Image (cartoon, rainbow, N blue to C red):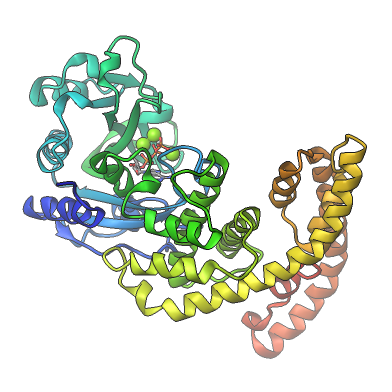
Length: 467
Ligand code: ATP
Ligand code: MG
Ligand code: MG
Ligand code: MG
């Protein structure tokens, strides 16, 4: 019998509990760490401990962490394995066990608990980490031809130019062992999928660039829950696992299309709707609200992409709350707070979606004119026109591009960027003059009520842009 997503999550966490780890909750998608907008990995909530800035509360821990990675937006629905929102399972050692133990447990979990055939698991090691290579080969018994050395770009972790860092070792699953071991490349994603990353935090990089061994060595790992589900459920991509497919199927039902027999572009649109709706559901639950800056803008962009894809599938009515209902129904084991916040999530989605729909309708008329003109002249949409759609109607460039592409028309991106730059320059000039007066006003205000009362900059910044 195939393991469900919920069973996979539970198996991981209880495996590490049986090895003495404390099961801790996921932290919020809104990180305490100021260096990232959203939580991108399981280690983030432990970063102060790893950096030696906070004492450890436990020696070892295991979590399933909600993550959002905006760098993967372009991969959603395109590769089989990338999401914006996903769950990262992890086991962590804060100066407790180290490399050999971490490798042995990763192997026991993968081949024992999850039952992956040993000959289908490949591993990568950092090219200078002979120790890890020897452990995989001599202690675990992985065949040397299935151990690949990789460079620093893929297999060396650091959180900045100085501080703790170290080599990684990753586990890959081979979907096509019949292709043999000759010339196999782990980067070939028609054959391999990376599912587990082990980071050996063993070095400290000093300001002069030199490396010294860390006194307390740490382990930081991450396994993509959806990827393990893809492997164990024998489906061809993460979206067809029980963790996500019901959301995709709901979108298909609303659009009135059959997922299984749909064209690739339609499938991609449905996957984007499923992925992004899941992401915005969790982000709203964690208190992010749509805005034109920071993580609020990430949320807004994701939701607008959902609406756009919906339009391209012929959906006209407000539909994201109905899709989100399925995401909420699937959320309990990952994050029980989502169900408690459900009504607020639906209300925010409906409001933001209607707002965007109004924007779209107004802009669409203008866009249609540009499109007719461009198509008739065999030309692209001019930079100033794309900028006009952005500035006046709130059309992000990607939206204009996507709608134009559907009609086989290009957009002059560099022309658009030139207009953007010109506007930036104009607002910089006006801000400099404004600053002088604001400064005087601020001084008076500070004297009267204290500096925290002044919100003029943030309150006026987005003015003039359609929300
Ligand atoms: P890839 O090379 O496939 O983009 P990565 O090397 O960027 O993955 P890591 O930073 O090592 O990923 O994260 C640890 C694990 O989290 C990965 O091995 C994978 O299982 C999972 N993971 C990472 N990014 C995603 C994503 N966008 N969607 C789903 N799972 C992910
Ligand atoms: Mg990646
Ligand atoms: Mg990788
Ligand atoms: Mg990796």
